[in-house]
Each structure stands twice: as C-alpha cells, then as structure tokens.
Image (cartoon, one colour):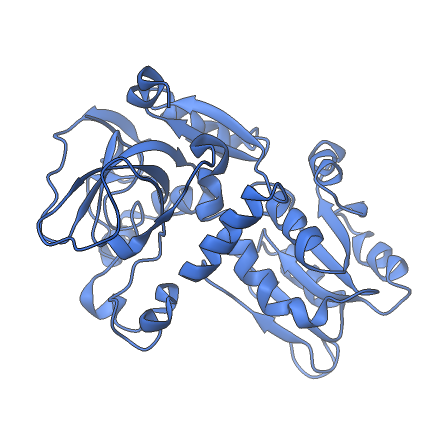
Length: 356
C-alpha cells in the first residue's frame, strides 16, 4: 500500500510503498477513506534531531492523526459491535483504557500514556496517511454513519479540539456575552461555527488579513478585526470596555497570547489552543480579576461523537482543499506557505477508485 512517511529528520515526507499491516489480537484494520493535514504534524517534523529522538518519535513514521475509513478486518478477540464495512472515525488521543481518566472516555488526559509509551496515530504511532491503518483497540473508533468522509475527517481534531475548548467555557457564554477567536484557519473557522451553534455569545474573529477574515465572515463571525497593534483597542470598543468573556487563541504565538490576555474580561476564560511557540506571562494587575488561563489538549471521546452530531445536523462544516495521496507532500508544503484555506484533506487513490 501507499503511505506518506517521515523517513529522515529535517527532510520533507515522502510517499512510499509498504506492506498492508495485519491486525493482531484486539486490533482493527481500517481502510482509510480520508486523512487530515494538521500543523501538529509540521511541528513534529520541525523538531531538531536531538529533540525528535529524545521524545522517542519513530522513524519512519506514517503521518496523519485525523483519519476516517471503513472497517476492513478485525483481529482475533476484537470483541466489538463493529462489523466489516462499517464507516468509522478514529478517536486520536489514545490512552491506556483503564486509568481514572480513560475510564471516563478522557483518553486525551491518560495518566499512564507516557510511562507505557502510548502515542496517537501519526504523532508517535503509525498514522492515517496511507491506504490502510492499524487501530489498537475498537474503542478508538466511533461511528461515522452517512457523513461524507472527505468533508468531515478534519472534525476528528480540527472539530474536536475547539469543541472541547469551547465546551469548558459555555457557562460564561450566555446571551449578551462576547467570545474572541484569534486565528480563523483550520481550527478557528470551525471554532466560530461551534460557538454560533452552542452558545449565545457575539463572536469576534481576528486574523492577519482580510482574505483570512473573509472565511470567518462566511462561517458566521459577527465582528471581524485585523490582528494588528490596534486589535486590542478595537475589541475593547466592541465589548463596551468590558473585554471578552472567553478568548480562544488558535495560534498560540508570541504576539497573540499577550493580546488574548489583554482583552479578557473579569472572570473570563483565556484558552490557548495553538502551538505557535508563545508563552503566557502574567501576575497581579496584568490580567483582569479572576480570569483563568487554560491549555487544553484534543478532547474527550464522547465529545467527538457530539461534534459529528453537529455536522450531521448541518451546524458545523469544514472548508477543505483536497489532495491525492501522491500529492500529499505538496499539501504539507502548502501548509507551510499558509496558502490552504481551511483544512487540507488527503484522499487515498484506492478510495477514489472505489468511488467512496
């Protein structure tokens, strides 16, 4: 089968032919119908060799932590309600399955994962950018149903991550409140839709140019602001001097985190989702009273099901650019150049040929 693999530190990923994996006891082999491209992949590939090896990432590594497909084969003893041919989405943040957090479906916060060497697909385990992928346990799969796989694969991260972040702040986002979204790209444009679907907040979206803000307007942002030196003043003006009740920074860069802190209202949530290399520095008097700063990671298994339900109801969708598996290295080049509008999706040629 074809797979996109990171084979040498510091070099671009390449498409190679490797054997189709055989599911072992309890495992599931999924025929991939779509895989999503994410900045997290680029972050891993951008690590210096020393850091890459210290974090025990394998080489070669099949990329892709966003994946959907159909069940192709069940390993021995994979006792499950799944059947061959079922359409499924992969829940990416794998855990041990038995710690306190995992028992609640919160495998993104598994307390044993580091000790046991458990890694998400594409971010340590072999991922979804291939014609087939191996899933360690049926619990890592949720029903996709009749949702279009290509249009919705990014929801497994670009939908789940903002949904988890927003859901934690919902008690602060009733009618008459304000939510700021910094960065309207792959995660941010989905976050705007989620805010409009589940909260009563007025949504203020920020990005660096009008072209990027056009997408924010299309998906429902109430107010759009260029993210420049005047952005904080404009947000304070739009919120009548009170600031935002929740700020979601989907960039996480050195300029954006201070901006997020500066526009937080009293008792606001500031949630830093992006991994742009910035840090939060604050102390008494530098942020509004009782404001909280959070750094979430991915989301819960039940929340993925809820995100897919929002998509099924037509309340959330993803702007995508489609690439074949042979074109997948170009998708990462385009991601680096910032030319992708929304989210890039890789579609294996075997999927194209089968008409799925």
